[in-house]
Length: 533
Image (cartoon, rainbow, N blue to C red; front, side, top):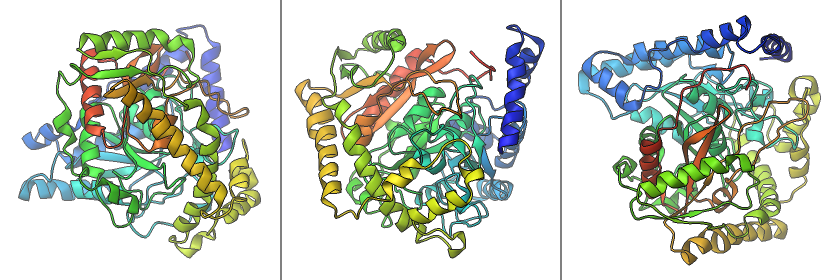
């Protein structure tokens, strides 16, 4: 979407909002978007059963999702969450149908359509750009390991999702969900509100039933925030459980990919498929003994009985309006047999910001140069300085709304041997782990921590940028520890998620807790594409 298209769409929405509540234009927009979709809230299990029985085929399912994308992502409410469709999707689906007939399914993901974020390499006809025009004319030479694992599991790679450009690490005044290549992603629950970043497209697409599964990436909050704000389940794994090879990087110590799905079960099945030790990513060596875990085995009622959960409240900047939702979640957890320790504040959570920024700056500069060095020469960009120059030469397309202050700060950083970097990294690890999550969990003998994931989403404002409403993402992100969010309730029609986070490699425990809670409260609702609150 270019600027002219955005302004035209904004004018249409403005006209709808100008009418009285329930006006003709408002009702028409709502009705067209919310019309019945045969695969609404379809799960991996339901589609697998349909394909096993012969009721559906992978091709038929793929065609239905492609039609859904055309109807509401590219038209109607124009969510703009899908940045590119895979021209090979139907061919892949046909091959998987033939394979099912001849040899049976590979596993639960066989024939299931998946959308992946546009910072995951795919060695096919699609581009991988992080939303930037600087990479729009080249393609990756091979799949990222996550994409390769999805293909191996039998998933249909349906396309790629829009994102906050460069995974929201370009400007201090950016608008989440906007990229020069993809335009602005809208929140499917309330269209004039933000879908959060940087995995905004994956969040919006998953919530709006544009695919069965979406994949996001997180450095700090980029899976868990859009999942919370779009009423999804998001899993940010322990760093090293899922390979980052072939993913456009920000941070070698915090980046990870993870599933964004409508149910805990689906997210667990996807995590099983994408995990694993990978020689292309040295960090995955730490997952030996953990990768290969069957996370679906943790999905049982009663998983919360007897567990000790600490309630983290302070240091996250969350508004008081979310307190009733947290209170209701705590009541549900107690009813399921959990022992609630309240409060159980994460020490030093408010001190993580400054050293984290230093670490990300250094690692982004180094990691981007390493990644770009493996891309084809046609892009003309090999370093962060090259990207800065490209943006300056293409200011009208790349920087119509906000600049590149973070780029300009990060490019001045030195190598990863710089004492400033090493001191900041040590400080991050100390504050987030030994003096943070590990400290409170040991002192209070906790099995996990809980918190409201993020505040309610805010009105999108391209002129002034994001107005974040707080969130509990940083401790687990900086520590590199796992974090699961699941829909917990609603505030003025806006989704609010509950987080479960804890020590490294505790994904199975967290997934079991999230599943038990999800089954009890059943908070998720499909979006109805309201123009405004």
